[in-house]
Image 1 (cartoon, one colour):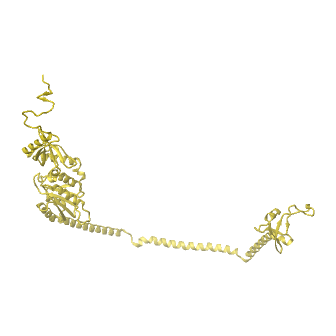
Image 2 (image 1 turned 60 degrees about the vertical axis):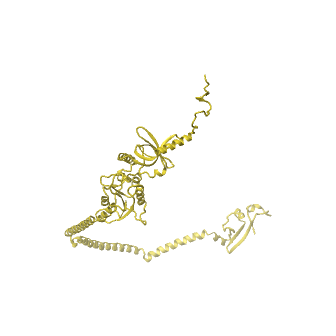
Image 3 (image 1 turned 135 degrees about the horizontal axis):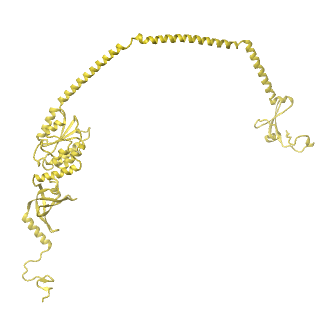
Length: 460
């Protein structure tokens, strides 16, 4: 049996053999050939399929897959083309994609580089619309609670629409007929590429105006467009337009299309108008009606004031008839005043009589004899008090040979030898004057010490 390692059909090491007519290809070479064949054979194609797995990465490119019942093909949309798509791709939407078929050697896959994408008929368009409507409704953008009341008489009205169409002329004409107003037009494209971004930017621009600035800030905004197909009105179904309307702090009237046309902008706006002309009618009242109403109110006010005046006069006249005359009102008061006057006179007379009696009694106590006795008694009391004071005067004894000793420093009278020794310097008060002395402790005596106190001081 032949060795398999050396068999011609199963060699261990590749060798060129007779009959080989092509060198082996590398994987990269094969991938490059396949890429040239695929791109050369198909070039640009249009594929119809349902979007699946759509995602946009940080670089701005988008990746997705297109599928039908039998097959799936990967797709890539570069950043520049993503920004130019007329709608936001979503899973489950059937589209027609136009692009180039190519391969991706890194994955051994073929794919389509999408350059343009369109919805596959109105059915797909309506499906996309319903998906977006459900999403925005779930966020509360269409809730009635968040809608604002329109001002009764806006001073400035902002209009977002095309400056060249019949819409702006209809709005201005209707406003002029009803109530001439200050209108600011923000010109935008109302269909086609970039129109949704312009409409959203205009709404945000009006909302960003500062009250009292160089450009007047509108009190009301009208977003308007004439009628058309669903494709023509699609810009007003765009998510950026709906979010701009919902976020605006200025009340907005949506007047897009005719009565049967409905867009997501209508749901987000504070009020929907069936036509642009109807939006102008909703925006302002009729000036002539206002004048008539004001005139009627003025007449009613005047009649009410006149009727009130007449009724007040009637009430006053009725009161005058029942009010008593002046003499009848003041008679009792006058009589009471006379009575009080008489009582006052009598009271004063009694008061004078009583005072006179008190005075008479008091004057009796002031007779000279009585006063002399009182004076003599007071003099006797004073003499007794003086004699008592004289007897208590310590200096009265000086005439009898006594001496009063005081401390020279304090002037206090000293009554003991111990106090004199403690004071040291003393003053001797005699009948005819004073003598200063110094107290020293007593020394030995040549005579009997029993004859005088032991603590008798020596005076010099």
